[in-house]
Structures are given as structure tokens and as C-alpha cells.
Amino acid sequence: MLGSAMFSSAAMAEQKIGVVNVQQIFQALPQAAEIQNAISMEFKDQVDEVNLLQRDGQLYAEKLQRDAATMSAAEKKELEDKILAVREQLSQKVQPLQQNIQRRTNEERNKILGLIKQAIDTVAAANKYDLVLDAPAVVYADTKDDLSQKVVDQLSKLN
Image 1 (cartoon, one colour):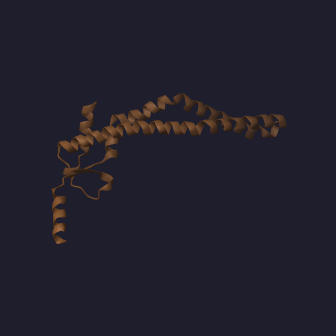
Image 2: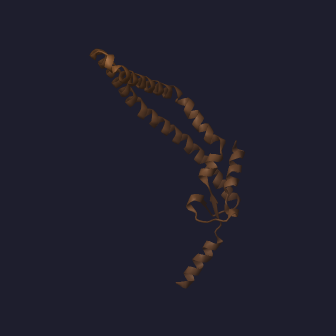
Image 3: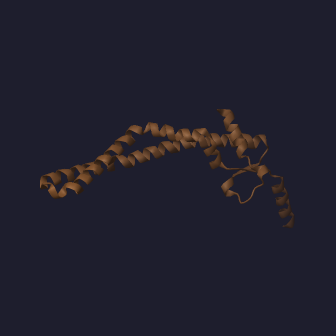
């Protein structure tokens, strides 16, 4: 039993373990900022339409609140119907739009994470690391085993 414990300690001592901060690497890449801009442009028309509907609904609600005392019952009903129509349109548009934006954001983010994974693999292999862990999962690591900057450098070579 003691012999196997010593063997396993010796085997672990021979492993070279590195650390990377994937989130920090992601944020350091210019592509991360480009994702948000590209997605904003992709959905700009739909977001503008939702904003316009929200503004219209707000204007109708303010008019109803402000002028209700001087309006006829028919005018109040018409304004209330407009408010309800705007709310219905918003409920039909907002959630699908948010889901589409989230889906596209995830698609683009996953592409970049794939590139980061490839760069980590390249750096780890070139520096003969047996295991590379994400920094938030590590309690302590010597800075000499932090491969984050090498991964960023590797990614910059790809562009």
C-alpha cells in the first residue's frame, strides 16, 4: 500500500501542469468586442422596432393618464385598445428577439472558445504540459505555469 502511494506521488510529480484564464483570454481578444457589435448590427432593425413600440405604448399610457378626466368613454376605450395592442405586439416580439440574440451570441462565443481551445492545445504541446486547468478552478499556481499570455500570443498569430 505504501509503495503504491509513493509511486502515485512520483508519477504526479513528473506531470507538468499549466494554468490558463479562459475568461481573461476571451476578453483580451478583439474578436470578443466585435461579436457584440456584429450582433447589434444584425438585429438592429428588430431592436429599433421593439423600441419604437415601447415608446408608442409609453406615449399612449401617459396620454391616458394625463387626459383621462377630459376624454369621452369612446376616446378612453380607443386609447386603452391601442395600449393593449402595443403590449400584445411587444409580447410577440421581445422574447423571440431576446432568444435569437442569445443564440447568435452563444454561436459566436463558441467559435472563439474553439479557437482558444486550439491555442491552448498548441501552447501546451509546444511547452510539454501534461495538463492545463482553467484558473478559476485552481487554488494556487506558480506564475511560471500560467500560460494565458502565451495563449493570447498564439491567437494573435492566427489573425
